[in-house]
Image 1: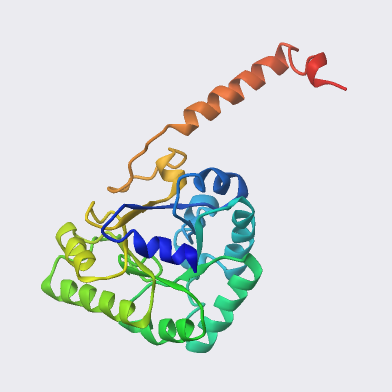
Image 2 (image 1 turned 180 degrees about the vertical axis):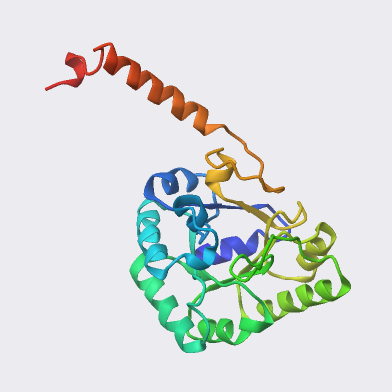
Length: 257
């Protein structure tokens, strides 16, 4: 519970850092800087080239989460529940328990507001910590991804959903691609933190896909800023290896038995 209290205590005080990880090696590095490490179903597109997060399976999420768990020492670990794994109270609880038992994560994340509020309430009642997710919902989006909070109807729905989720006990809410003014309004109306992705600096924290910010993906999304061109550094290392092998410099005696 200390980890959750630390996250809640950051509300209106200091920004929350949330980053994704799909393996132990990346998790070890992310853990040094993050408050929350998210094993996102974004791994579907990042690692498997799936056209939609809907194709991500529970088994895939669990296997990657097991690896991530090995690399985390201090951060709160959250795992996305895949599409169709929380359609009912029974399936939500069964699959959430399976995720937590097998991965030893701290919480699960579900997409949606009022439409899934019964499942959220049921999970929390059964002592399963839940992170909410509003705005653009990749698991349910059809066609081209669009920002949310453009119309008065959308704004009312977003605020209502956020308050519903808070009332039922989620410890934080991800706001994806929500218009800045609306994200600010939601953040100010809640006692729990908001974590933004493409939703302005007004949120209590920010999350990005680590592979995106490191430049491993060539994703052309408005909210993605590349903080490093890691592909360039990888190519330098691979080129050196290739060259030394061809020139018979590697492996030298130092690297041979």
